[in-house]
Length: 144
Image 1: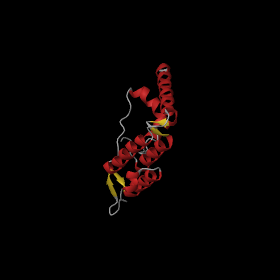
Image 2: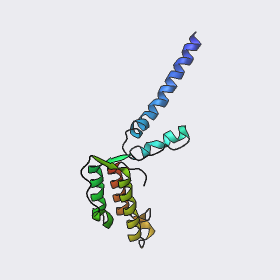
Image 3: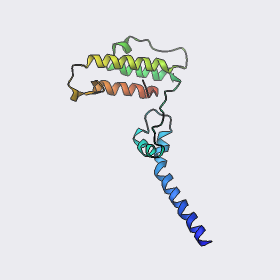
Image 4: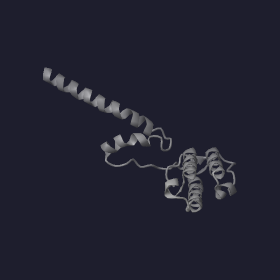
């Protein structure tokens, strides 16, 4: 009887230690905010063996789209600057956000092609890279 209690107690303590170490990763990774838990994910990858699937939301709030559009326009995207402010409904398809991100990305890469590699990240200047990611985060878009 004592052996069964001891084995059960050890199993409970071990399970608690594992769950306690993973709790911050789960709490951050499941908030629904784009890219929030990326730094916590390696512990999950060791357990699951494959990366979690990142998905874009089906729709984005118009205020978030307009904020992203402003970020990209201020960073120098002519496409974003020429696009119209979205209004009239509460939200829009996420494809609108993906479209403005891909157009700005391609525009920034073309504009920054002459920079030395040390001053670039993903083929564009670091400032443009940061602007693209800030705009994507504003809309909750993780892949574009």
